[in-house]
Image (cartoon, rainbow, N blue to C red):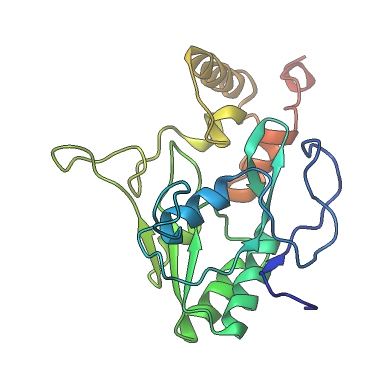
Length: 231
């Protein structure tokens, strides 16, 4: 890693679906945040006080090392995250001796993510992970060596971000719900269509796929027509 004075950008992907102006190619020493999500989270944690700019962080004298693992995409302006980049970033931070890692994004156990998390925990690194929003998958939060952060509402009741609060069944979720975007009555129409598809064909729209494979299929594939089986 050459000149990684201000952190590192681990994103290197094709331009398909990337928002105009976003940095998507070549890992380098520029971890600037196009979408703004990572910057907002870092500000909540460690924004400097008494400078008349924005908010004050909860730990304003902390040192923050920005590690970029996501990019702003069409249909997902707040960003998509590549688990291979996350795994690389966790291993990088572990080697540098960074004591606390914040992962405020959806996670899937793929591309060596769990292995990197295990190695980090063995090295004494504390990983803090989002518990989840509105049915998004947060598999990293299920590990015993990860701190999953949720929230409670007035009266100490669960909010939609609480761990295990899954708002829907993944095989019947539309792309908007998988991405954590706002949903409306059309979500029910999509889900009803998925159920009817299963009744007509004898299997779900994307078969028995689960986890990352199911998420990728919902976002990028079109189910086979029921007519291909039932004529």
